[in-house]
Image (cartoon, rainbow, N blue to C red):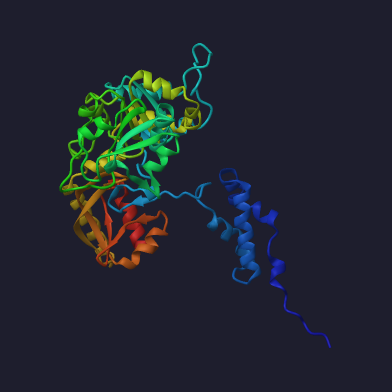
Length: 433
């Protein structure tokens, strides 16, 4: 007797080449690449084989699974209240810097003089902008991050010799990297002076000898020591003989009234520092970079050292840094200076809109911090929208991701680092979550 067998629906699953011919997927190949698009198609076909997807929906499922960009990095709205959040990439670039990066993405005159047709100094426009921003510096140089700037200085100036440094300034800079380890790795020897909480001028004078390469002063930018403390200012070290190298850390180029205790390059140079090192992606508000400013002879010695080639920055960083230095106020500067009254009005308006949608929300006063190893202990008055903490995960994993902080049983979306034009984006994200 003949029995009709049910049709195997897996035979209806479209072939890979047929799915890739879908106009939406064909267009995606141009922006995301064939490997990425084909992986999305294969994943959709596997769902259909397991009976979790109708074969007719393979193309639609593949399109829905495609990433927005050809990178795993995702743009995030920073509602943590930490202005320079290391895990979120520290300083967000300005629109001017972003456009500069796009302009430099192709072939560019980074090391070429268009007028003469000859080779030119690499990144000369960026170096000129940095020199103009800090006129007290006799010369400037740029490497790929702040730690690299200090490592280059130690390698070029102190390999096989001694660096005199206070014990209270032997800091850990994050992710387990410790300043003493970085400096010793350059071949220099550390001559530690003073104690954890108190170092005097006589400690430095007693340590200076024929093997002294330079005196190092490091700003303890990620902690504060209070109480029975003493440090030696740069201007007092400047008269002792050896060069004075100062790592200011956060990249502040001139005094900032909001952060009166944060050292800046201009003041430190005027106080007699021979060389200043700093980061570009912190308070300066630019891309990751290491800044070196100071005496022309020292800068030239560093620039000509073989290690400088290994630490040099690429054309995209040079473009972003120049635009940061010469362009409009950066998002970092705007976030630092955003008035609490403005943040309160925005938080109240956002909370009211969410409540109108039936979502419990409340505007609440809070405090933001600088973060990124800068201005420890400084709190900035701010306002946030308080929500159910259960929304934290769906907000982080939504599109776009919105990252807040859970505090005392509430999810706080601090608006200090959220540009006002993105309040509607936050509202929609919360509604979807």
